[in-house]
Image (cartoon, rainbow, N blue to C red; front, side):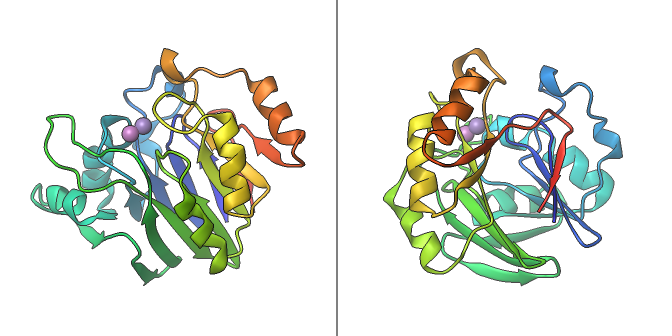
Length: 225
Ligand code: NI
Ligand code: MN
């Protein structure tokens, strides 16, 4: 499993020859200007919630690639009404896709489209694929529901928001990694806007002091699990 950071909360996940994008927000992110959105491959686009900083490029990429949009029922219904392909889910539900098993899990946040229309309830994803299990938290507060995850899934990586203000900050993300029982963390949802700027060294040290590994990737950088 190869994971690429495209800035903010946008990820590319490659499992075998299947390309998955998560929360595509690139054209509106000045910090991600090095990413050529036209060159991104997508068989699936996962959407955690409807906010613009997670959905801005969904329509354009799905139109170009024919990718299947996977999200909550309301978000998928929105994109289907635009003529795009989608697979609706809701909290607690799993589905066996060609890349592996995907579960839509709880997040504590909000989820409206930029025009204010209803975007269902926000969520996160657990992907079990190629013998690796990852948790993509989405925008969320620390929530006790995270403790349910390790009861069924042994995670290899937890992707957690760490920028504070709109989501968990560093200290809550450390507790979240305890809750999900995974000490390997990829941080996201930081630095994009003034409200969520963080000190990288302080963040890494705080995790390190708890015997945890916080990875912060450059935009366009990848890791292999
Ligand atoms: Ni949000
Ligand atoms: Mn967000």
